[in-house]
Amino acid sequence: MQKPETVEVDGRRIRGQTNRRKIVDAMIALVSEGVLTPSAQEVAARANVGLRTVFRHFDDMDSLYSEMSAQISKRVLPAITAAFVATDWRGRIEELIERRSEAFEMMLPFKSAADVIRHKSKFLTEGHEELVKFSRARVIEALPGEMRKRRGLVEALDLLLSFEAWRRLRRDQKLSAAQAKQAVATAVGAVLKINVS
Image 1 (cartoon, rainbow, N blue to C red):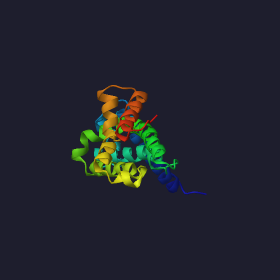
Image 2: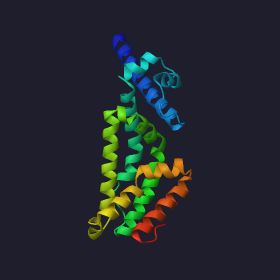
Image 3: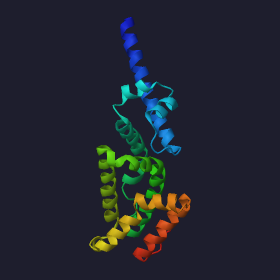
């Protein structure tokens, strides 16, 4: 038989885990609805917890952004880190366009929110730099050896297949996801002088 004290401690731990999850879910919901920089008060209200509870679980809003980013990464990473299926470089480029369209669309509200405050956050700055570096490496990996040496080509493809290009097409040019994907495919095809679907 469990001692009452143990049951109370376990109940507190479960309550704490539940509140932490509610806080992160509230942050994700607010950002996905277009609130780029939710306040701690907004997050607490959405999570239906007290403001002190938010800061009991997270030292500051940066640590809450960190947790949100980790949750979003779990959803997005499989789409962008999976090994290429295609054995030819044209097929790999098509896979890149397909996967990035899907991943960037999922990331759009969250990365846009993170970029608003990135200059204040070491964690978000490092995450951004890591994404840029990884994205570039995947572009290079998709190309055949002789094309990898053409710096201008690599730079152009890196730009066209970047999150920033996706955000511009979706937010500033107001294209649908399908239209943005087609625009990327058209631009990449023009640079490579191939047809990309």
